[in-house]
Figure 1 (cartoon, rainbow, N blue to C red):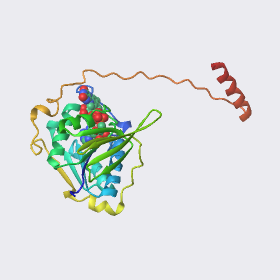
Figure 2: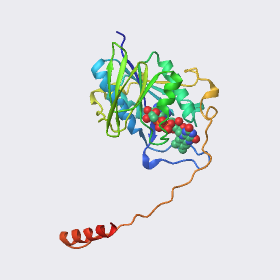
Figure 3: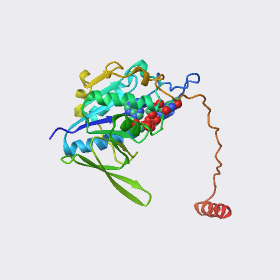
Length: 265
Ligand SMILES: Cc1cc2nc3c(=O)[nH]c(=O)nc-3n(C[C@H](O)[C@H](O)[C@H](O)COP(=O)(O)OP(=O)(O)OC[C@H]3O[C@@H](n4cnc5c(N)ncnc54)[C@H](O)[C@@H]3O)c2cc1C
């Protein structure tokens, strides 16, 4: 049986407190901001790693972004991934979800024959949640979204997934190859293995590909390949929260609180 081939799509995002948007271009300012792996992608990685624990195989991390994302991505190697592929080219900049999913799909094809592509539920900066479904469309793979658990029947080449719904859960199955998006906080991502630290720093663990390397059509990438633009930005008005500090002994505070709550009824 061929070795299981898994890709995990990992986006590097600005730390929430450092998200800034260029007022003129309406694009995210990425230089001089501290970045981290998109937190939901840690859940996607954990789900992929747990499959590797059970079935063996190889995990490739795929990311589109500037080359200075490389140190952030190496964390995935220290968690148990095998190789990083970073799609980095000035011509990829300003991509909307259509151009992003096209570029990532070309990256998946370039890596080789893949059984499973894992994504997070959504990114903490763009937050459209469109990438997993778009990727499945470009690749013509099946897709299972918002899963909290997966099991694999490697012989029959089927993936079984659990998705929580109101009042219960449903079990879904799909033949491989398949794109899976993972529900945020559905698992506890493992810590880095410190024994892997120096291996994870080796130069050859990261492959950087540009638009020519992945054979991307220039009409489908970056701003040029993006049919949507941000035409305006507005700051959400700040709303002062009402608050009141109650004074007195614990009994007085409790009585006071009870009478305030009673008046609200
Ligand atoms: C200021 C701003 C303006 C934007 N304007 C537009 C716009 O006008 N039109 C539009 O369509 N989009 C717009 N976007 C979204 C932007 O194009 C996205 O960052 C990008 O397309 C990916 O979509 P997402 O971040 O919503 O990913 P999501 O679909 O929310 O992410 C789901 C998962 O896909 C994977 N993923 C997403 N991006 C990557 C990546 N780069 N590399 C690897 N994996 C990835 C991750 O696993 C992630 O958890 C804007 C974003 C920002 C911050």
